[in-house]
Structure formats: C-alpha cells, structure tokens
Length: 125
Image 1 (cartoon, one colour):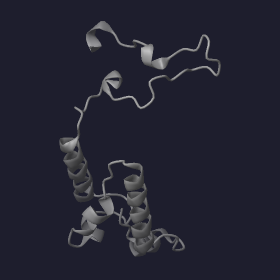
Image 2: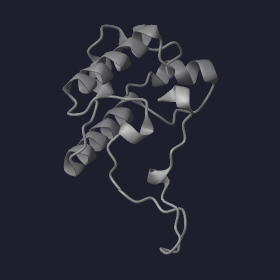
Image 3: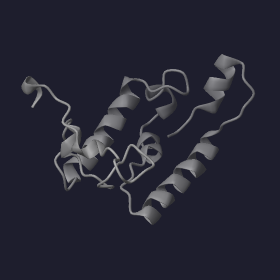
Image 4: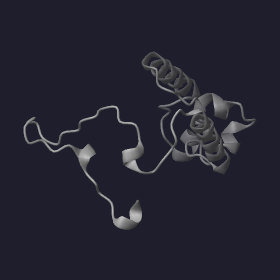
C-alpha cells in the first residue's frame, strides 16, 4: 500500500524509516510470492496510486486510510469476492478447509478434532 513518508515524518517528528519506493518494492515482492504460491492477491498499492492526489485523498495522516482510501480497499476486495469460486459465508464450517484434521493434542490417539465440534445455539443456524 502506498505510504506518504514526508507527511508522516513531518507530523510525527520521526526519522524516515519508510518510503513510498520501499512500499512499492515490498508490494511487488508480496505479489510475486502470492503468484508463486498460486494465491489470489489484491494489489492495493497500484489501486491507490491510480487515484489523483492519493497522498491527501486516500490517507488522513500519511499512514492511516481516509474514507476514500477505505473505499478503494473495499472495492478491490469486492472484485475478488465476485470472482470467487465459493460463496462467502460467516459460518466457519462452510469455509473450505485446507487441512481436514486440526487435532488439539500432540498425541494422535485421543486427539480432539476441532472440525467436528458443533458450537452453535438453536437460533444461530
């Protein structure tokens, strides 16, 4: 995600530890890692950079998102959800499980599998 280092350093009286260029390199490295792993990635850095005067319209203090910056994040997330091969749900058991067994014990015998729990009340289903 872009970063207004000058605004942040000036207001906070901090030594410059971050820069927009460093954030870009970090963003590109994260994107490449996700591609290598076959994981869907949202490129917020590029999405925010497309906005005119992104430093002032997307951030309130050079670090934290403004309502305009938050809207960009939401829009990018919604694009991915619309393309998803699964239906978003808030119920944890309906989400795809990468690991079928999640034992809560180091010992195989007698291990409790969290996937088998039913933790809901009658009116929650």
